[in-house]
Image 1: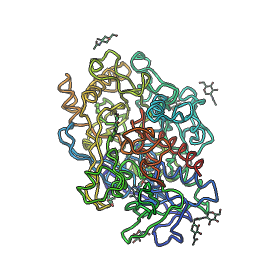
Image 2: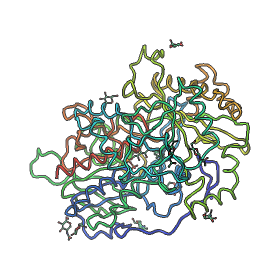
Image 3: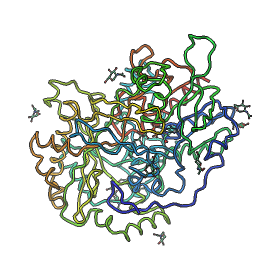
Image 4: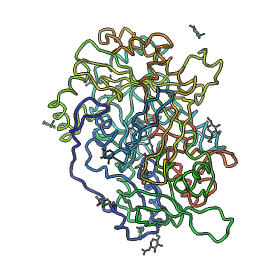
Length: 599
Ligand SMILES: Cc1cc2nc3c(=O)[nH]c(=O)nc-3n(C[C@H](O)[C@H](O)[C@H](O)COP(=O)(O)OP(=O)(O)OC[C@H]3O[C@@H](n4cnc5c(N)ncnc54)[C@H](O)[C@@H]3O)c2cc1C
Ligand SMILES: *[C@@H]1O[C@H](CO)[C@@H](O)[C@H](O)[C@H]1NC(C)=O
Ligand SMILES: *[C@@H]1O[C@H](CO)[C@@H](O)[C@H](O)[C@H]1NC(C)=O
Ligand SMILES: *[C@@H]1O[C@H](CO)[C@@H](O)[C@H](O)[C@H]1NC(C)=O
Ligand SMILES: *[C@@H]1O[C@H](CO)[C@@H](O)[C@H](O)[C@H]1NC(C)=O
Ligand SMILES: *[C@@H]1O[C@H](CO)[C@@H](O)[C@H](O)[C@H]1NC(C)=O
Ligand SMILES: *[C@@H]1O[C@H](CO)[C@@H](O)[C@H](O)[C@H]1NC(C)=O
Ligand SMILES: *[C@@H]1O[C@H](CO)[C@@H](O)[C@H](O)[C@H]1NC(C)=O
Ligand SMILES: *[C@@H]1O[C@H](CO)[C@@H](O)[C@H](O)[C@H]1NC(C)=O
Ligand SMILES: CC(=O)N[C@H]1CO[C@H](CO)[C@@H](O)[C@@H]1O
């Protein structure tokens, strides 16, 4: 039994029998061939999209290498509500932490990343959206590639998404806009399927405070504004998580030209021997395991190890900042200071309110026998509270256009229609920092900084691939970031003051929140409690072919190399204005088309 760090209840990992696909190998000694057309590093969110799309061509052979374990039979990876128990510090996590954060009173905290088939798409909280059209148009502008514009990217929703009815089968008219969705794609997406006490209050508050917090009929993004509050769409169907493993890999798993090797850490890439001394370095060799075994890509290596793993592998391979590499004794092959630089992430602050009645989930989650019964119900029927996500309603907002910060800082949002911050409404104590009190009922209002300007870095700490890198997001180190968090705290207090909540909510819980009443006290409250919502990007930024900075070109090829592309969240130069798995899926779908076209 372990006590979940983020949910209050005690939960022992449960398993149903493992049924590994025939092609899934668990040790490199099982490989019958050490050469493949494509070698994909990381069976994560992006990596398994590539594995599926590239293996559509039976003439192409593909090896996917994943450090982590199988997701099969791991109930916490399947039952949506249990997603938050998968991290941090479990067999499914890389167990990273951030270095002490100067903008957060020197605090350090967990920095989870999925370490199992499906990567972070198997370990995340299942929020599913695509960012705003302005996010993609900005990417197009920054990279000089019209193919990144939303008008081109939205076609990939149809390939990716399979919108399905909610698990409780309720009538969803008015809770999403069908024309914005795909119904024949690969990954299941669905609306909430288990009602929470606060849902009708939240909806009523959007009527009562419709100027500041209007109801939004569809929260997927793209051409439809994300501003306002509406129903969460989750990467789930029929009561179970839909990850890149359960969707993209499951669909492709029986193809004979696709091999997936788990339980195997990639140590680094090796430069292939080249005749011409001035040849552009070719990185088609991948070293796995300490024995020195090498697999070779006849065509390309596709690096999909995520914002942390990809950065680490590049630097271990001599692709990075010459000064940093030299200080570790690594021979620089490609001097590129942008590698690991410009890390950007969304911050999270849980604001806890006490509620008057016993209608939150807190008492249920404290009752081990009720929790066990809910797990049994999920196992038997894939229904009940654990078949649903932890949240039903959430939304996005902008700072007012006359906010004082804009006299000194230009608006960092992706555009005038894109949000600065997010509000997530939860029917219980949902707080990664502080253990739940043994009594009491709560409502948690999480705020997330959506348009951060703080930029940090990821650097390897040593030449040992098994050492954790130094992760320094430099959270809340700019005036804009602290201003936006402060104004968001004020705004959610206005939201909770709506008459709709008056019979349920009694007020802020705890002294640091209840005494956060003026700018200074709100700022210290924010710096004292904020952590991450796990959306790191930017450490292998995409830029135009002619740019002086950046790591990959608009077609994902790594600058200064041949035979190597990076396809994962690390290439986003700006963090999208939403949760990031949906943008990663669209990115990887387009990458598949680009790689196929290149042959
Ligand atoms: C706890 C958590 C909650 C989140 N909640 C949400 C949410 O609700 N909604 C949302 O949209 N987004 C959420 N995110 C973010 C989202 O899941 C990620 O942005 C996205 O999945 C990243 O995809 P990726 O392909 O870049 O990396 P990943 O999916 O992390 O894939 C990288 C893969 O590479 C493997 N790997 C790394 N290094 C090596 C190596 N050396 N050798 C072999 N394999 C390696 C990893 O094990 C992993 O499987 C969450 C993330 C986390 C961690
Ligand atoms: C994982 O790999 C190690 C060696 O790298 C091996 O000892 C172990 O048995 C493997 N696990 C499985 C389940 O095959
Ligand atoms: C290994 O795979 C490569 C690429 O598909 C192929 O050319 C080669 O013949 C294979 N070798 C063996 C021994 O099967
Ligand atoms: C993370 O921590 C868990 C729990 O201690 C452990 O089982 C797991 O092996 C660790 N993962 C890594 C990559 O170190
Ligand atoms: C769902 O509700 C809408 C309006 O609220 C109604 O028009 C529609 O017929 C309902 N659909 C079903 C299947 O009941
Ligand atoms: C749950 O809430 C939704 C949205 O308010 C509503 O459409 C649905 O009918 C409710 N279901 C039940 C069983 O009350
Ligand atoms: C970092 O991001 C900024 C935009 O915020 C950009 O101007 C700069 O070129 C980036 N630097 C690198 C090294 O990518
Ligand atoms: C599963 O559903 C069936 C049919 O509705 C019901 O009889 C049974 O009690 C349920 N099982 C659990 C464990 O909830
Ligand atoms: C911004 O404008 C609103 C009215 O539109 C006003 O109430 C508010 O005080 C203004 N804020 C600032 C900082 O000027
Ligand atoms: C490496 C590999 O598994 N290649 C196979 C790809 O699929 C074709 C058949 O479709 C096989 O002939 C290859 O051996």
